[in-house]
Image 1 (spheres, helix red, strand yellow):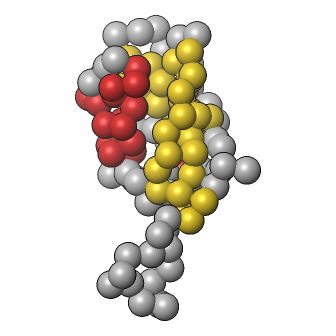
Image 2: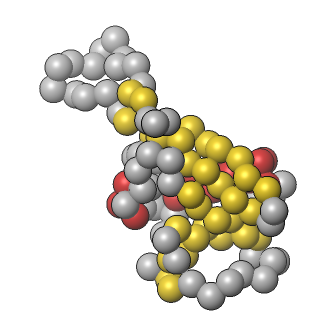
Length: 103
């Protein structure tokens, strides 16, 4: 399994849990890469992480997860139901995007 807990910062207390890190598999064209991030990462932040790996800019990246376009940049990965080792498909808005249901 590719999940792990991040280190708890020194200023954290027992009431502040460690953030769960996940490995998200990103597929685009015929290629795949992985990104390690926290589940509270926003879609906008995730697009910034994906950009250099898919040679695109965040504003052109479209993400599809479980058949749904992840449109709201302010929502988190966990709010879309992501967990360990999930796969996300990435397209540039200049590519032909397959049909998906917007969320």
